[in-house]
Image (cartoon, rainbow, N blue to C red; front, top):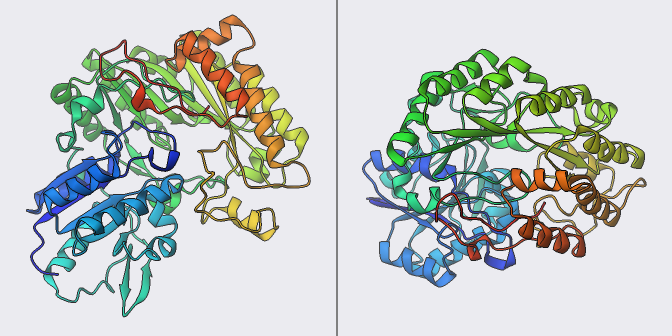
Length: 503
């Protein structure tokens, strides 16, 4: 294909096919769009999710822009059908458009993605270097050859070729900062989340930052290494603070959510970032959506609080040190989480704690130890997930080897809803038992007193009226409940409230 001029990113609408709605923008789009544009391509973005576009609207937007290539981002297997539907809509708009899918979904299941004739190519792993190389090869050759490129899936003589991603970006500082001007940034950043599980935000405009990639640990259920690798790669302190400055200066951001898997792997670097935020004295608050409890100490949390941090999320995962050590393989201990919880109470930091139940090799008594520990921890909000097998994870390999999955198990599941419903059953537990326990222990622990209820509502940015309705529907649907956030009042400043998501 010669003469590529126009590239279109399309983000599918998560609401299609009755799925839950996520109102966060897709980070890969704001990272990759400026890189592609700098190469001389004309670039636009169709954000079908944030803008809640119908299928017809997506098709017509594609037709109106008339791109040569459409990049479809698919960040979760839960939304597999939406991604494939988007490819179908693109080909309906013009069969000659080249479609390429990227993200966690094609990286995890490239063979399944490429079984769809509407998808011409897939980019696997990180896209900053691969997407430009892919476009160069595609545009310069009538019969493009990708044999020297890693992280790509394509067809050759009607045979699908999968070339896994083997390299990861080492220098994260050398790429441009995210560019939100490709989106309706004012609309995106002024949406205030009000969502269970620590996803709520307090102020707008709100921005997100990822200061590192990769995770050195080998938790049995985590598939993040497929996309980000196991080696930690850290942005410099100066580069991260430059992004903080940009968000405040260019977009008026008043809250930041740090989304790293392991932001505190290098504690000295993390302290320098936090101190840099403190010294700037911006009208800015921030939170960590995930951090390792064993990395924390009182002085670090105190500095975080002084710099504007108001909330952290930790993942104790289990109330059994044996399960943590022998099943999950996570270097955490219950004592770590207990210390962090006490420090948060002393400092006035909100604490969200995440747990996972239903692992092969976990006994029912150990699952009950987890719910008992979640109560003992006395976090402001706790959440339970059911262990879910993702492609390439140890959890998936063990479940398959031991015959613990349904005979008709498929990663393309229409009943998938986050981690609210499992597929693994053992002699120790069944799926209904896990689902009922998850739902009713969530309700009992978070709302055991009026004071606990108020803490949960405050952390998750829900009114007491919203929370009561949320609890009722969650109980009656045994934990499978979500509301389309697009129906909520949005983008009206700090008083806006979104609808809750599945707990």
